[in-house]
Image (cartoon, rainbow, N blue to C red; front, side, top):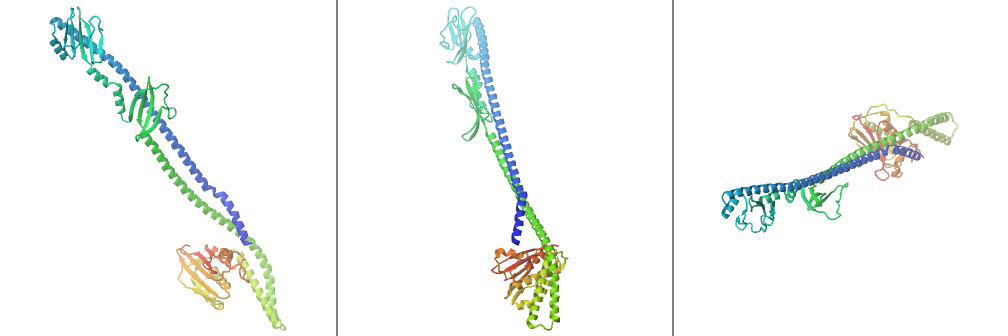
Length: 532
């Protein structure tokens, strides 16, 4: 019945403590999990922002390159017009100068060739009013099939021969034809041409290629990110961000190096992983601390509830015992006094009656001892602490019980060693040792052993009693500490509980175990004087 009541108290404490405490560390893990989720969302937002900014950067660069190409195309056309106008003006002036010189003194073919070389012209031809032609070098203008009247008097370009020539009418009649090569003009065109511009742009830092291709029918610009005409891919180990843009009837393709973008995204993920790992470790660490703190607090609550229930039970039992012992001891005293008077005053009693009176007297004394133990157990213990040498008390008690050890054929093993004294109540400690010795003697009525050991471990004193009187299952050994439980025919079941109460009153611990078959080991740990 006693075990079931304690079990009921434990079952009462556990749901209360768990329902109040246990979810806290789980809540701590949930909070850290939410923090990791928030961090993940934040890093995803950063990656999204980095992607958006990078795509915007690619689009801006592509748009800038497109404007450069358009401006270059316009400049190319304008440059060609300006250059041709300059060439036309130059050739016209040279023609008029040659006509002037020819009127002063007519040129010969050799003189025209020499003059052309000196003036930067590739060829000169003079046609007079009679149609006579003088040219230098010879046969340079044989490709012309037109005469002076049907010729185009503006600048002409012969791309096959790579020359510019101008046919200028003379004041009287005839005409002058001057020509120059397009080598310098071609070099200028090459310097400002679109392919060269694309090569120059492709060689700039961060730009992998710039190309222009013809647009297919119904071709649309593909998008890769939020309707942006940019796509990112890998080719030959390079990270490329390619942007497409319509350029008239063509499509401009610009490939930029996306290494910095990929590196930035990679760094963001590394930062997220490191931060998440640190946050997880911190969360696990604090959850572990909180878990162990809660377990300690839960155990404290359980102990408090057990002590509270035990104190309540002890108070109830104490009141009942006080009433019962008071009511029982009065008639017991009367019976004892009556039996003593019978032994002293009755002269006509035979031997059988005297033995009966003596047996009754022994029973009354035994009942009186039980009542005394009940009162002893029910009252709270308040030790008067002083220096107590337990090793000295043990030796005294062994001397006192030496006769009983011999009568019960008990072998006592004890090696006295100097031990640090403790602060305690000498009478209570002596009662503790005496109860343990009595328990060992009563548990072995047919003989056995009693092993006593005393050790000093740091700031605690360890006292161990062993005997061979264990008759119950070692798994149920703790039941021996329950009040009123006994395996002896004449026991009250209060010897070990009183011992435990004395140990607890001195802030100590008492445990029972069975190291081997039928052996009971009682271990008591008390704080020594150093700890006090």
